[in-house]
Image (cartoon, rainbow, N blue to C red; front, side, top):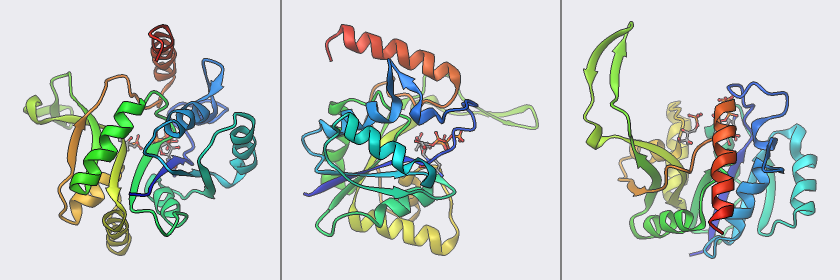
Length: 231
Ligand SMILES: Nc1ccn([C@@H]2O[C@H](COP(=O)(O)OP(=O)(O)OP(=O)(O)O)[C@@H](O)[C@H]2O)c(=O)n1
Ligand SMILES: C[C@](O)(CO)[C@H](O)COP(=O)(O)O
């Protein structure tokens, strides 16, 4: 199946609070987005990548793609207001022959080739799949600072990316969300809403999303460990 990855990098990184957007901050000396693209480009099943960035960052990203000789970048398109809008714009830049689509956060540079391949295989088999990890903490529902419920941890997963789908399914889910005004923080939810089951593929705890300054420190440590392990 011809496979493309939409890499969403058009966020503003409000929670990071840095002058430079988090996807361009250095991780072991190289911009986070470049680290992410290097992993995805080295996945045997990934044929092409669509990068979604802010209009102001296009030139900067294009230069980095060239300087770091990142292969498989087929298009760089402008993002939207919400992550979901950015993914939708990415969908518009896919090649006609593409049958399988993964969506990945630029802000998750620690994903591994094995994780990407596993989620693609699951989506090819079942139509929709996401990476995720079982939650480690006990999770409580809180309303007005009062605990109202303790959830059963055995049923709870923290969801990661990539998430992968057969193309018609992902396109249908995004169309339905747009028509009905549905907004979600991930693509798997949109697919759930149109009634298609999503396979959970257990990934690694190290596939963190760089969201706050602490995450960057943790990512540096994890990156260093990866280098020491020779991965
Ligand atoms: N309009 C948007 C919003 C987010 N993203 C991307 O979606 C991924 C996950 O989003 P998140 O971590 O929430 O990034 P930001 O929206 O940039 O962060 P914040 O919510 O702190 O502003 C990131 O790679 C981000 O660049 C995007 O492409 N377009
Ligand atoms: C898609 C995602 O990475 C799954 O964890 C996440 O939902 C997107 O980011 P946000 O921080 O919720 O905007």
